[in-house]
View 1 (spheres, rainbow, N blue to C red):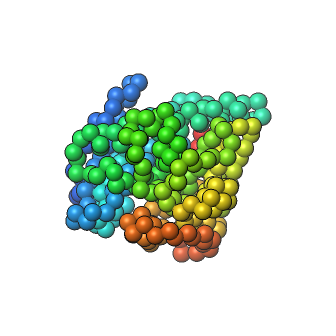
View 2 (cartoon, rainbow, N blue to C red; view 1 turned 60 degrees about the vertical axis):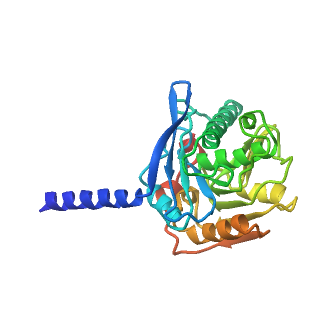
View 3 (tube, rainbow, N blue to C red; view 1 turned 30 degrees about the vertical axis):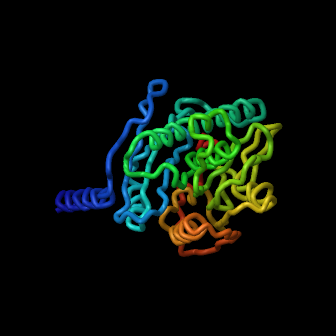
Length: 309
C-alpha cells in the first residue's frame, strides 16, 4: 500500500511538472564561458498578447540553483497564462567552492568576491539578451522585464543599473537598449563606488523584501566604498530621492523567504506589469505588509549572510 501511494504521488508530481512546463518552447545555448555552457529556456505565452516577456534570473547565493528548477515552473506557467513570455537564463556560479568569511580581517576580500560574482552574472545575462536580439525564438528582446530571486535579484538590479549607465559590460547590447522594468525578490545592489546612481532614468522597479532578512540586506551594509544596498536603502537614497518609478513591499515577520514568494506576491506583480510597465503609469507604492496569511518558509528565514555566501 505504501509503495502504491508513493508511486501515485510520483505520478502526480510528474504530471504537475509536465503541465507546468506545457508552454516550454526550447532550450538554446547562448554562450560558452570558461568551462560553462550557458543556456536559456524559453516559455511562450498561451496567447500572443503583445505584453512584455520576463527574463528570469534564479537564486542560490552564487553557489547553487538552476534556470529550470522545478520550483519555478508553476510560476512560469502562471505568467504564460496571463500573456507573458518567460526566458529563464543561466549564469556562472562564481562563489561555488569558495569559502566566504565576514570577520573584520576578511570582510573586504569577501565583499570583492561578491561584487565579482554579481558582475559575472550581469555579463552572462547580457549574453542571453544579445542572443535574443540576434536570434528569433518567439520573444521580443526589446520588450523585456528582468526579474530575479535573491542572488538573481542582485544580478537583475545591477543589469538595470549598468544599462542605464552604459557600462563596459552593457556594450554588448545596442546603445539604445533598456529593460522595460525589473522585479526583485529580496535583492540588492552590490556597489564598489558608494551609493548607486543612474545616469539615465531607470525603468519602473518592483521590490519585495522581508524586513528581517539576514541574508541579503533589507537596508544597507557599507564598508569603505563597498556596500550592499537593499530594497529599503535603494528607495530611500536613490529612487524616491530622484522621483523614479518604483513599488516596494516591505514584509513584517518575514526574512529571506520573500525571495521564494513568487505566488503570494502575484497580485502585486500583475498590477505592476499591467500598469507601471504595459500602461506606462507613473505609479509609486511604498507599502508595509503585515499579513499572517502569507506562509513563512522558516528554513529561508533562518539563513544568514554567512549561510548564503
